[in-house]
Image 1 (cartoon, rainbow, N blue to C red):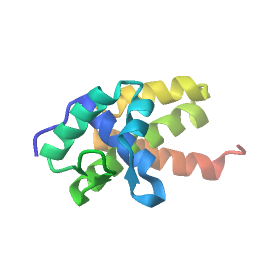
Image 2: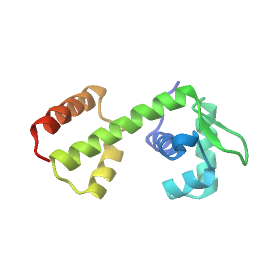
Image 3: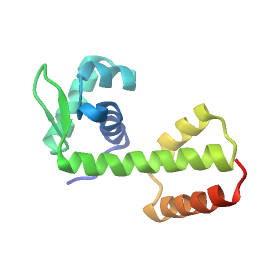
Image 4: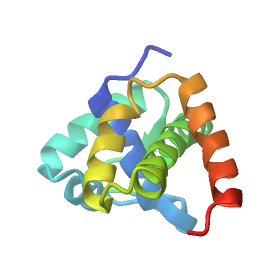
Length: 129
């Protein structure tokens, strides 16, 4: 699979975060999450479907494929680790931490995320938060 653009990673992460326990999401919800029109979100869903990351039938629910679930899970985990590092360690407010994590998750190496995750484990054990 070709590398996804930052924007496509964000759409994939939106599908992942919104699908929850039902495993599916509506286009309307993705568009609202991304703050775009349904037409724009539909174009993005078509691209993700072409890449084999989602299944998307017109006027139907959107589902992640196995490949989409794996890719989105990695993106989401990066986001949450970075955001938690910013809020718990650096004491950055939630909104700024979320915005910055969203930008950084696309370019940070797996090695750096692993180091942050390991640091957070030790930090949580040794902190009185």
